[in-house]
Length: 164
Image (tube, rainbow, N blue to C red; front, side, top):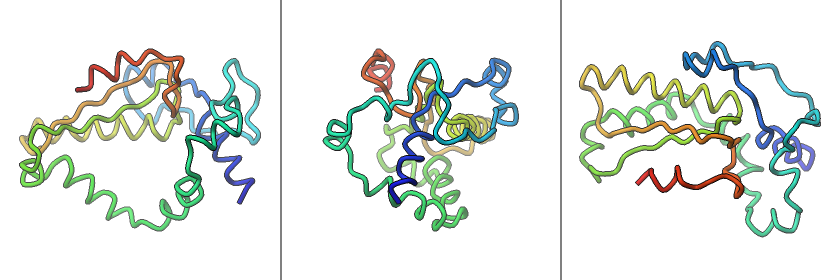
């Protein structure tokens, strides 16, 4: 399990570069999905979790979700995940509960391709449904420049303030 956690840390906190063409077209099929080797090769910016000393990481982390996320992801039927997402965004009755509450999807410019592709797919689906008048809650998809999967203290938090 320890090796899996170390691999997860490397995978989730590395900085990835996505092609400008993929980013302009927001086409997930154009993202580089090549698996990175473990340990990740050296790059200009070290992985976030590789540069945080273990004591600091332990002080702000609870390993339960990390250690259990693989089992949860593989154990939850996709149909359930899709249904929950559908209700959250498109069910007009659900949208009447806390009507001023909007959904904000924040993704980092240098995050994993899976996160980028998911953000774009949700945005595309939402726009299609909104054009047909079939949304229950508002959605905003925001790219955080310079961020990977984590928001770094070295990044300006101006973008987060604007999400109100």
